Image (cartoon, rainbow, N blue to C red; front, side, top):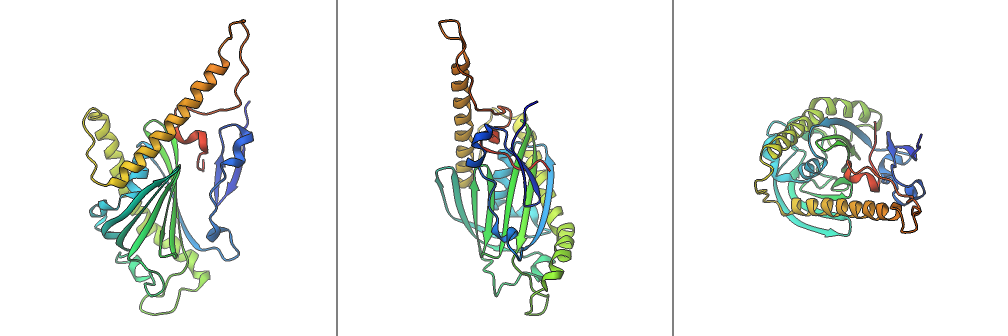
Length: 275
């Protein structure tokens, strides 16, 4: 039986399905706010959505869909201020209002954290965001097949304020507060995103020959990066096949050390957690 490098970090299990000798070249993302002596309070959520992994990355980075979350209002009035691709990374930013929900908005300390803008990064194959240095998140996608994705979210907060006061919530109380916020606001909000991307997948399957209408230029950059990485994977696979093909003298070429799963586009460069 084949074995693969596995590690546990950030409360998640990570598997590297490629050449074990290359595992150290594709490290698990560092999240110092969660690994330090005073880790930030966090909210974890994971789902299995019937949607291609690229649609999920598009969704969580495209803030023009705020009208889908009118009940929870995690952000609104978003205006894209910049977007660019640098290597295997897409960076973008929005001027927007973050954390304005009727419940969660009471705990956001706007005197200490600038919640009028957000920076997002698609650092293939992971996505993350930073609001004022005090509210952050990561999104990890694990393709299960061509139309199903397991998605993992980590939200973490430096501090929250006591509603109606200037004092911060004591750190021992942050954990229980995060659990309540996750159950009452964050997970229901994300389920709306799941409904949206699953509907998008269904629409694509019915109308896959139709032109794609996308007004947010950042989404085009995400898609271009994902396609480029998938094409690089196919090129490596084809090169491996050539090396393994019989030579003219009747002997086989040396087998390649690389491994990958063509059904899972991000698998060559490292996959996010399995649970």
